Length: 223
Image 1 (tube, rainbow, N blue to C red):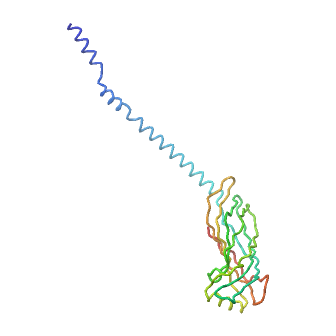
Image 2 (image 1 turned 120 degrees about the vertical axis):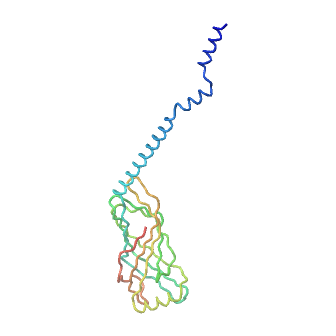
Image 3 (image 1 turned 90 degrees about the horizontal axis):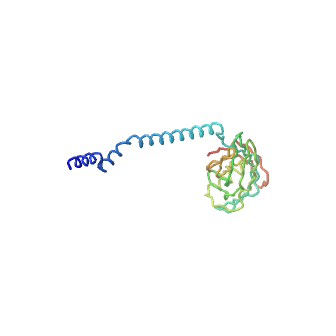
C-alpha cells in the first residue's frame, strides 16, 4: 500500500495545474506578437516609401505647365447703353489656347466665359463645349458673348459712353472652368481654372463688326 501511494504522489507531481499551463503558455511567446508587429510596420513603411518615390518621379517627369491663353481677335456686334441700368451687348472674341506640355494632355470638363468692364460683368455667362487639349497643341475658340440684358451700375454705363467717345475701351474676357491633366493612361482629379484676358479695343460709336485690338497681353491663368 505504501508503494502504491508513493507512485500516485509521483504521478500527481508530473501533472501540472491547467492554470499553470496557461500562464506558462502565455509567458512562453512574448516575442512573437512584437516581431509580427515590427514586420508589419516595416512592410507598411517600405510600401509608403515606394509610393512616395514613384509619385515624386512621375511629378518630376510629367509635371504640367499651365496652359497659355491669348486674345487675337475681337468683334462688337451690339453695344446698347440707351436703357441704363440695363446694358445689352453682343461680342465675339477669338482666343488661342496652347498646351505647352510634351507629355501631358488637358481635359476641360466645364468652361464658361463672360466679359467684364471695370470689374463689372456686362454679359451673361456662356457655356463652352468640352475640350481636350493634345500635347503641345494650339486650339482656337471664338465664343459669341452677350445677347441678353445685364443690370449694371450707372458708372459702368457712363464709363462706356466716355470710352466710346475717346475710341478706346478696356475689356476683360474671363474663362471659368475645371480641368484635368492626362499623363499616359493616368488622369488627375479636377482643378479649378480661372483665365483673365485684358484687352484694349478700338471702338467708335456706330461701328459694328471687327474692331482693332490695341493691346492684348498674355492672359493670366490661375489653377
